[in-house]
Amino acid sequence: MAQVTLRINGFAYVMGCADGEEDHLLAMAAEVDKRIEAIKASAGLSGESRMLVMAALTMADELYELRKNYQTAQPAPVAEKPDPKLARRLNRMAKRAEEIAEDLEAP
Image (cartoon, rainbow, N blue to C red):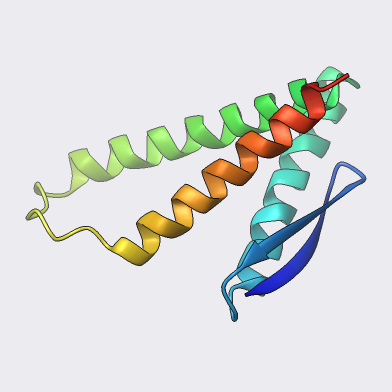
């Protein structure tokens, strides 16, 4: 398992990932950082947790709209067997995001 140091809003986060996924993880962190910079430019400085939540919400909104547009543009997909590797990866990322949020909220 590889480890990557991500820089988001000036903070360093060491994250584990599967070998070969380092560049992808760095690209995702850069996208989050880009969103936070845009939030700071439009809304000003705020707490770290709040900016992470705002960035997550803007990304979730974009994902929601993309899915909605995809569903209306495409016929209903045939149910396929879920990708277990993707599910594990998403679960690890969600768990790590929760750990980061807990660390940020700790006094």
